[in-house]
Image 1 (cartoon, rainbow, N blue to C red):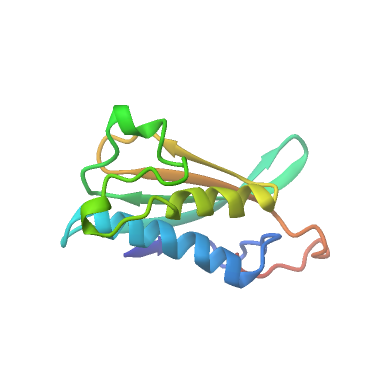
Image 2 (cartoon, rainbow, N blue to C red):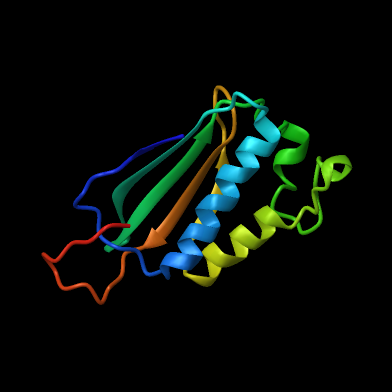
Length: 135
């Protein structure tokens, strides 16, 4: 697993434990569905939308990806392609609920290989301008 971000990245308006849950679920999902040699890459960058700052987090793996027929259902509770191996189909629906509850968005994006999730989370507005932390 690799991670690219800037040390000047501002904190997001999400508790550390919640952000850890979101990211660990996506990384674990990539590993479970990608096989033993899957590589997961996380990146973060600052993005401005409609006059508000967001941190865009991308989680990309090099596994088999998500089929077109499944891509529209992956955030649906109890939908899983891994029921035989103990999957419940709750992980991605919980991730989506956590992101949306914090005024963010998550989407599965097209990718030439593997699965790519793009998350937008608002920057913590209580941070004083010029005072930066880590996402």
